[in-house]
Length: 478
Image (cartoon, rainbow, N blue to C red; front, side, top):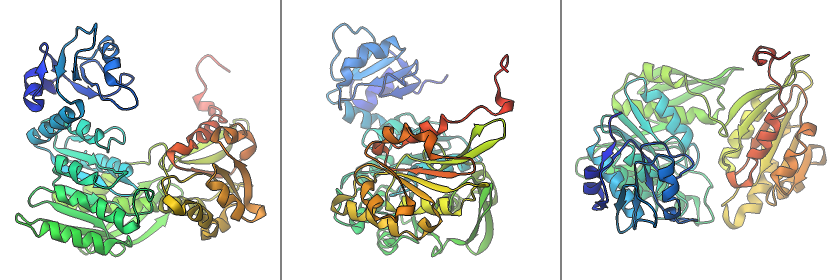
C-alpha cells in the first residue's frame, strides 16, 4: 500500500518533531476503529487521548500525534504544541497536495445522504474520497482532508455546524471547487435566533471557494434569496466563478415532476432545459432535491449527465436515514411488515418529509401506517410549540397510530386525537421493550427522531422481531 504520509512529510506539514521514523496508511482518532498503519491522533475531549496512546500502539498504530510522549510509550510519536492545530495543519497539507476536484456539502437536512449520493455518482468517473461517517466538524473535516489520497480524482467533504462561526474556517480549510447547500431548515435554533441566521451561517461555505469555483443552492428553500445573494457576492470577486440553483424553482437544474413506485422514486428534471430522468431506489420524495443537487455538481464538473443520473440510480438510503426494509414476522405464512429507519436525526423539515414518505407508502393487507417519533432536539425556546404543530400535519390523516418517545414528543401526543394516540414513553428502551405489541403483518412503520433521543433502539427492537427467510436458513439447521 502506498504510504499516505511519511514522518518527514508529517513533520513538514505540522511543524512537529518525530521521535522515530514511520510511514502512515491512515488517520484515526479512536482506538476502537483504528487500523494497523494508522496515525493515532490524541485529541482531548471528554477524555484525554494521551491516555489511549499505549492502547493505540497495541492495536497496530504506526505513530501517534501528541503534545508529549506518555509514560511507558516507546512507539514513534510526532510531538506538537497543540494536537488539534497540528491535525488541521495536516488536513491543510493533504488538501494542498491533492489533484482532486473538491466538493463541499452543507445544509440543515440531507448533508450525509447527499455526500453518499455524490460518492456513488462520482465513482462512475474516477476515484472518490469521502468520509465514511459524518465527519463534518472541527476535527472531522481535518481528518477527512488528512486522509485524502494525493491521486484521488474527486473528494466530497461534508461540513456541519452547531454554533455560529463554525462553517467559514472549515470551508477555507477545505478550499472546495464546488460548494453545495442542500436546504435550510429549523435545526440548531437553540444557537441561532432565526432561520435567516442559520442560512447566513450555512452560506459561509461559499467563502472557501477556490477562484473560479461554483456555488450551488436549493432554490425551493424560503431563504433562497439570501443564499443567492451570498453566492453571487462571492463569485463576483476576482477569479469569478458561477452560481447554479436547483429545485422546482431552480434555474439550472429544475424539478418538473416525480412519481413514487413500489420500488423507486422516479424524478423528472430539466438541466438547462434538456429533460433528464432520475430513478432513486427505495427513496422518499425529500431525496429528489438532493439528487438534483448532485446533478448540479455533475454539470459544474462538466460530466456526462446521463451517466451521472444512471450512477445515482445505484444509491440507496443508508441505515438511519430513510432506509426501508422488510421484517419477516412469520416464515410459515410470509407475514411481514415494512420498517422505515429514519432514526439518525430529526428536525421539523426532515420530519415533514418522513411523514410524507409514510403517507405515500402502501400497507399490506390488514396493515396500518404507524409513526414512532422521538424528540427533535436543539430547537430552542419554541421546541414544544414545534412538536405540538406536528399534530396538524396533513399526512397524519393517513397514519393510524403515533407512538411518542421523550418529553418533547409528549407535547405532540397531547395534541393528537385519541384514536391516533399510541404509546407515550419517556425513554426509547421502554417502547422498545414493547416492540412485539406495536406491529402486525402488513404494517408500514416509520421510526424518526434526533440521534440523542435514542429511538434507534426501537429500530433495533423491531428488527429483532424478524426471522430469517427460508432461503436464508443457515446450513445444517432445519
